[in-house]
Image 1 (cartoon, rainbow, N blue to C red):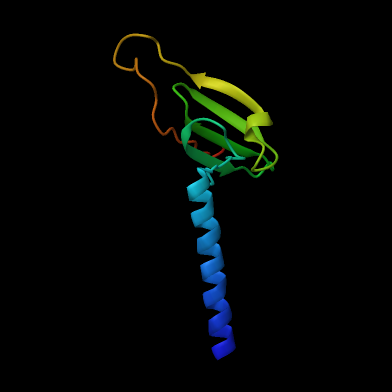
Image 2 (image 1 turned 180 degrees about the vertical axis):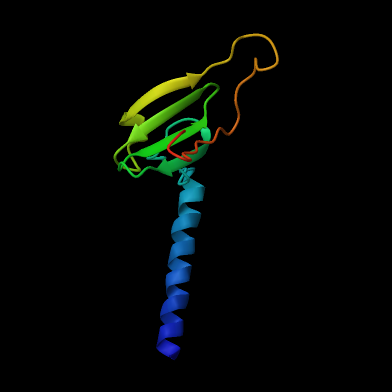
Length: 106
């Protein structure tokens, strides 16, 4: 048990030292590549019984993406279902749209 504790302690010191070296060198190690969607926020995903995943997200207008796999929406089919009319009560961007399938209807 004592050997295990020593090994864990040495591991923690090594990890801290590597991280401290990266910080001193000015290396940014916080990169993140989102494989599901490259832009937009507030995703809403639905897996339909037909085997497709359907997704919508905040992008300014409302678009629905369709994909056979969860990680390939950007390469999948998409259709624009709403865009701002430019004036009036609904003239701004839609925020956090949702997609529901109920009683065989979207």
